Length: 329
Image (tube, rainbow, N blue to C red; front, side):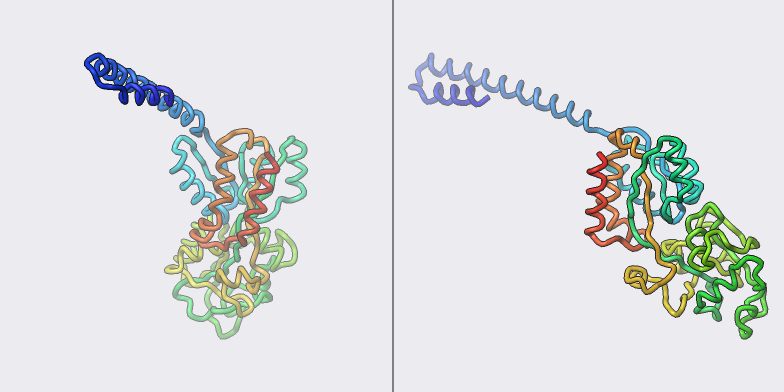
């Protein structure tokens, strides 16, 4: 292209006679023909490159209902940039999600607790290599109905008394005598939930130890509606679900501390603060769309984790997670 431009310049700067003008005109036509041909070729190559870079396929995610709002927000933003990639996000609970993950049914498992030893063994048995990524922090939130004007604070000991197996707490007055002599209606995560595992471990001192006579669900939205619809109810679930439903619910202080972004971040909302994770099937990284999605997830987590109501990691921790992803490749 550059040679043709120089040639045209030489022709046009010569003395202008009839023949010279004719030659110049022909040269100009040839020059622009070459330009147009080159542009067409470049456009064709650009389209080819874009087609090769365009992502498509399906990414399967399941697991924690606590982590799901983060993953759903990431998936929504990712699909805006990559409309040919379908990201499905199931909510089977952390444990329920791991049952699928350890046999290779999903690419990613959302988890509100670390993977258990038996789940690690199942992965090993099925030749599933995985990578753990921390994506944010949560504070399990104890909630009551909006009309509840008596329960503003509970101690860990009182929570244990309410939720222990064969609990004698049947009425609110069984917790404190001055409270209403009305039946307490309980809502909480089911046994497949990582939130259930974490709550029972830190409140009861033993994972899985809990009374069974309560309304249980893997879906935190069902728990929200249950507490919102019953004046004498009490429940617990992830902080983001409380943040999204403040108009329907009241948060209860635990040991005098309110759950908030600040108290979860600084650790003063103890012992109910915890990290949140995603687990990635390493084999799935061979697919470009999965690698791009996880990279997008970690790069955008600082904003999206906060947007859905959880607490982001410090920036340097997200950089560490991205370095881990790079090392896995």
